[in-house]
Structures are given as C-alpha cells and as structure tokens.
Image: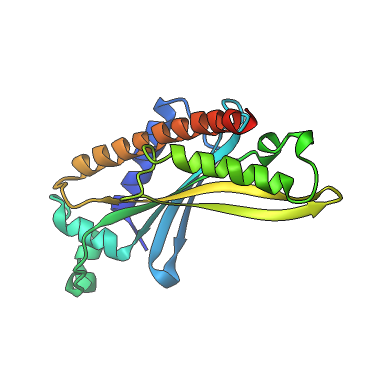
Amino acid sequence: MNYPIFNSFINRIKSDLLKKNITPEEFTVWTESTINATGLEIKIDLSSVSSYVTNVTINFDWDKFRETSCAKQLSGMEKHPMLTGNSSKEIYDINPSMDVEVTWTLNQNMILNDKSQSGDSKRIDRATQWMDNMNKRIHDVLPSDYIISRWHIEIDGDHEGRYLSTMSLISYFQFTLTQQTSLNQILEFISKRLQLILIRSNRIIQIAESSLKTVAA
C-alpha cells in the first residue's frame, strides 16, 4: 500500500536530522499490510553525549485511515491513491493524528555502580530511589496531562542479590493534524514536533545525571 503523505513525513524527518548533523544508528520504515499500518523507527546513539542515557528510540505510527483522512483535508490531494477509484467510496470519519512513542534507554551500570550498595535488594532500592527522583523532575518535560509516561524494567540476580538489568523510560505522544490545510504546513508542523522531542531528550539527559547526584548525596 502506498502512503504518499507519510512518505513526505519520512523525507522531512530525514532531512531535518541531516541538518542537525544527527546520524541515526537505525532508520527503519516498516509496513504491515494485514492491519493497514506503516511507521518509522529511529534509534539515535547518545553514548557520546551522556554516560547515563545510552540511546533514544522514536517510533512514528501511521495507517491507512489517517492517511486517507489527512488527504481529504489537504489541498492538492485530488490524485492521492486513496481518494481515487474504490478507495474514494470508503469513509473514514476520524481526525488525523500522529502517534509517537519515545524510549530513553538508561545505562543501569552507571546508575547502579556503587559497591557500597551490594547485598540483596539494596541495588533495587537505589534504582527505585533514582526513578522516584526522576519522576519528581520530569513533570515540566513530560507533562502528565497530555503525555503518558511509564518505566520499563527487567530484574535479574547474581551472588550479591537482585538488580535491574534493563531500565528505560517510555513516553507516548499524540500530535493532532487537523489544523493544517496544505502539505507544506503539515511538514512544518512535523519538523517542529521532532525538534520538541529532541529538546526534551536533552532535558531527560540532564535530569538523569542530576537525579543520580541527588541519590548519591
């Protein structure tokens, strides 16, 4: 299935990253025809700028219904493949929006690198304190009234007790695309939202480091 509007999003995002001298570790476009869905996954290595956040992964989700609804509201889309032939007879009464999932993967070895914390559950306690401190500081960066955020952790064990083997912070954004009337307007909107995500990533890096210092104090 062809998604001309989403392909334009992909090209703009690729161009924006190039302008910012950001070379993604992964830049993957996927399509799943059985559910009429497509998407873009970007993984950016942060190890050169942070000891505490190893990478950020940004997933943009799209589908046939959003593509069609978006094509209906934008000017100059008369020849869009989903507005011609049999597709034009289908009605999608939805407001187009872009769902974005952002995952910050934490370097748990740096966060838990405190030999005085060895022993059963002590490393888990330290990680819990660090996450609690993070939660208190990220409200301005990831407002809970319109951004859903959660922690993903995996617990393992060794001879010194339990510890977190995986730590990541996941946030879910939804960008409404109902105000734009041309493709150029919507591409500018996507660019601004990408910039917003990158700015928030920088803030998450800063908060991760300051939270660790607070816990260690």
